[in-house]
Length: 300
Ligand code: SF4
Ligand code: SF4
Image (cartoon, rainbow, N blue to C red; front, side, top):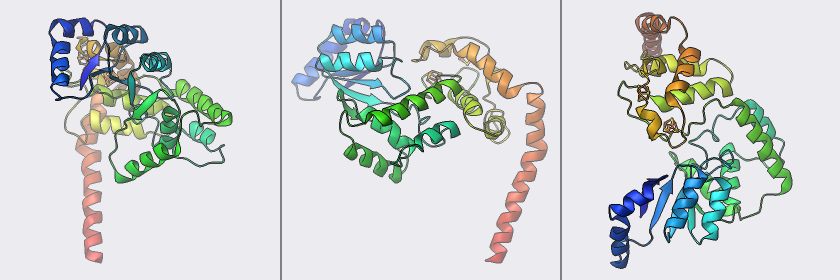
């Protein structure tokens, strides 16, 4: 049983509310097996929480881009040294480390004699740590389940050789150069009172810098501008109230970052482009699709 997202000061508050006593009673009664917490804050807060109670288990964010972020490697080692079972979440950093990796990063993975998918590389890195007991990764397809099982079966702690470790460092450099916003897509910052889809704004903004082409700008106009989604959720709507920033485990200054997103992704005449997209481009696109479907049916 994990207490969700404990951070600085959170433990004292829960203790005062009687949560620990409640969990201990539940454990004694056999209703739960282990008492733990999940965590999104800095490593100082993590150490304080670890020291505050005799925990069985904790859940931390950890991947090869987050070695010094949040609990980080120091937190992982500290928890394990204190006899706490560590489960890792976000091994693919919200999917950023899987799928469409930047060309420059892929070229580095390609230097290896062993061919692996980007997800395999990322999972392997986490599993290589002896302090990690379990890795949880969101899976949407059976292939991903099979891939994850394969990596877990193949990887034992401290099994990554030095030449492969070098590749991780090089890939990390590439991501650090390209990523503009360190957002994991966790979604704790939403809903926004004026409807900004904050995680998607940051995802498409990062994609603009990580991948070639105008794919992210088109998606931004369609999904967030409301051309295809019929609902506006773009960064330009933000009124700077700051509600979201208080909820962000990565401590991002969301309102300020959204200003950059708006400037780079929307620019001048954004609403005009949305109008044009809605009234001309989208109907033409839909018309072409409908025509294609009819032609295919006639051919059959
Ligand atoms: S600061 Fe902007 S994005 Fe954040 S909750 Fe307020 S309006 Fe929404
Ligand atoms: S901005 Fe912060 S809270 Fe929102 S999705 Fe990104 S990391 Fe999570």
